[in-house]
Structure formats: structure tokens, C-alpha cells
Length: 332
View (cartoon, rainbow, N blue to C red):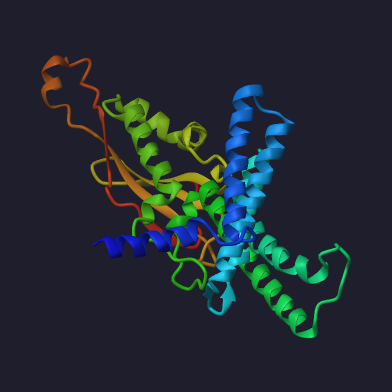
């Protein structure tokens, strides 16, 4: 047991206490020391230039120490050294966390280019900071690394740009991405993501609030001016939606048709004019039936001179149907 502890202690001491001061451990210790001093300075004098300079020195020491460690260990990923990429990540975490007007998305996009710059700068400068020309083989490697970094940076930019589009236009999540080579729809991203479904559902609620249990003559007047009422309902709903950017891409219309029992069928349509996998676009449709209710018990309250006024009943389909193309008739 004692022999095992001696072996473990020897292994730990070789890592923690290097035999030579010129080692990666020294830089990491200097980094931690700088972090501690910047914390003490912040407690003593508050935030200021001195604190930022000490903290910056700590990040520089820490990045150089980690890079030196990984390079000594010959850590490779797909044949590429990992050290400059880790150092580039540390630099981006510090810089983009320090500058408030920059975002982490910018940090991800800059990370590959910063990593390549860390590799390239020592190849173009001597220890005396004099410019030099890299060897032909190194030039080819730098060009290959630069192309890889540009590809990764573009992929990061494409990802964040796509996420911004989906945040601003959530109805895009309801589309079909089966033919896309870049976008994969997750199982929880279904048709209910379309704001048109929210528009039709809330329109149903508003119509029921306006017409349910309403005298039939008032209902018929409402239906004569149906398009004006739908425009007002659309404006009210779009203001309350979380994503206002795509509000102008949805249009609410309705078609009034005759139905059984002296009632009417209302085809409520939410027409999408934004980008779509269907070339001619699409629209969502929900059908509601408005009919007069039989007077029933109210007939006993009526007299011969004033027969009972029927009240309206509004019933809507549970299913919302998606149709390709544009509706041929959008007005009654």
C-alpha cells in the first residue's frame, strides 16, 4: 500500500512540480496567480484598467499553458493538433465575454479563424518579432487549415442565422424539410408550430364570443360585414402573438356559404405568403357552422304578436386542414 501511494505521489509531483521552470505548469500557475491578483485588486479598488490588465495577463498565461500541455501530449483529432483550437476557444471566451456588445454567436463564428491565426502567427514571425516566410510545406498546411476554419465558421454562421429565422418566423418549423440537406426537423417540432393555427383557433374563439347565443338578426348583419370583422379580429390577434415579424405574412380571410337548417358555413382561411417548401404556397382552413337554435323553452315566453327570436349556435370543426396553393375564392 505504501509503495502504491509513493508511485501515485511521484506521478502527481511530476505534474504539479516540474523539474524545470521552463514548463507548461509555470504558465498555468502564473495564470492562476494573475486571476487571484485581479480578484484582490477588484476588491480593493473596484473595476478599472489595472484589474483588466492583470486579468488579461492571466488569460494569456492560461491559454499558453493549456496549449503547451496539449502540444507536448501530441493530442490530435482527425490528424489535426488540438492545442491551437483549445487556445482559440479560451481567447474567444475571454474576449467575447469582456466586450458587451458582442454576442456568443460572434464568438463561435470567430473561434476557427482565431485558432488558425494562433497557428499562423509564429510561422510568420521570429522570436525577435521579425517577419519571415514559412516553408512551402507549412504554407500548404496553413492554407488547408484556413479553408477548414472558413468552412466551420460558415457552418456556425448558417446555424445561428437559421435559428434567428426560426425564432422570428416560427411557422417555418411546421414546414416539410424532408428534401433539405441541411435542416433536420426534431420530433417535437410539428404542425402546431404554425402561427396560422393559432390565428384560426383564436378567430374561432372571437367568433363564438360575438355570435354565440346572439339573436339571429344580429348574426345575419354580422355575416354581411364578415370581412370587416375578420380584419379587426386579425389585427387584434397579431398584436398579441409572440412573433410580430411574421405577422404580415399571414392573412385571415373567410368564405360564407349556405348550410342546412337555414344556417351558414364559414370557411376561415389563414393564408401563408412566406417561404415554403410548396412552390405555390399553402393555406390553413377551419370550417365553422352558424345556425339558428330552435326556440324550445323560450316559445312559452312568446306571444302571438311577438314570436320568439331564435338564437345563434356556432360549431367549428376540430381539425384544421392544410391545402397547397392559394384559395380561389377569398371573399364572400
